[in-house]
Image (cartoon, rainbow, N blue to C red; front, side, top):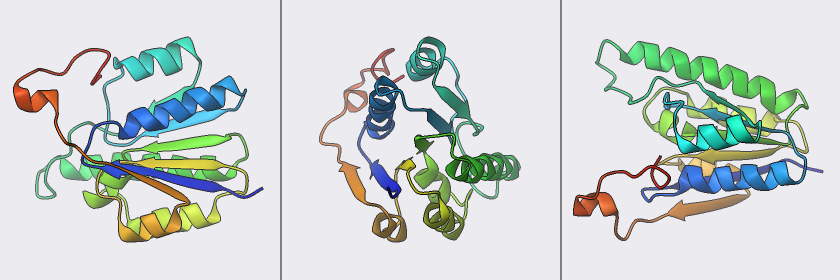
Length: 173
């Protein structure tokens, strides 16, 4: 059995949602799932409330929310939080406890300079056999795409926010 790497990327809505659908599927088959959310810090979202609180999925937010520009005084704290989350990810990719590890928004973390791309590529290459790994977020790099077994790109054609419709509970969060 080999590891399986999937990426959900692009500028459209649904990257995390697709990954969370995989989490539901895995839990339905009795598999152990870990979701590490990089760049997110709101624990009142619908996915947290359902996955963690109702289904017992191990979901941890390792980010600090909206990432400022690198010259902002708070940027180093975001980088440190991402690095700590990534260290946890490396451990979990190798300890044999998880069947599915979702690294939510890790592609965006790389593109923002919070995590080094080569470290992620090394972690993917060295992950234990049998683990399914999902990476989400905008701006997946060509090297990440090359390392993946499956890549889906979400492409926006139209979005309610562009029409002045605010984010809705149960749809965007």
